[in-house]
Length: 149
Image (tube, rainbow, N blue to C red; front, side):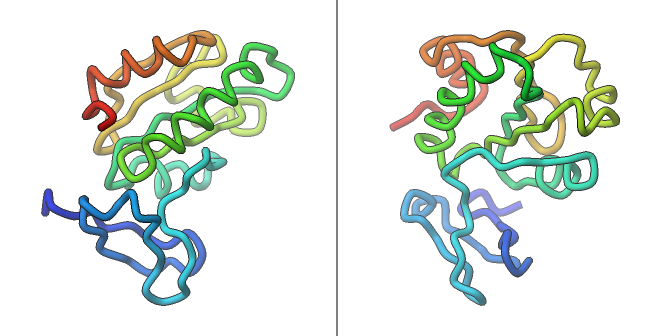
């Protein structure tokens, strides 16, 4: 794998796009349809899309296992939105509703929510349970990801 660039599928048209790592902060767009390639906000994933969106991602993915009735899940949502913006191009943030997607939640042994699971190359790297403050989430992510510039 080329470490100077990533290949990102366009979320709109599916075209493969090569993005040089030094340009991920420049809001790259698809060469075919001109849509934004790298989300600056968490994306919703499901049992059906988990493999393509998370496991096949060329960049690490932080998956938030959550449910709409969960107060701590709602409390951590703005923090995850901020992390997605700050680490755009270096980290994808995904949200999986455990009530609607029990197969994936069961596969990863989710018993308490919110549970955050960091995957790199499709493999779990670390998991965090509970609504942690942003400072602590950043510190834990920095153990496994390059720190913010």
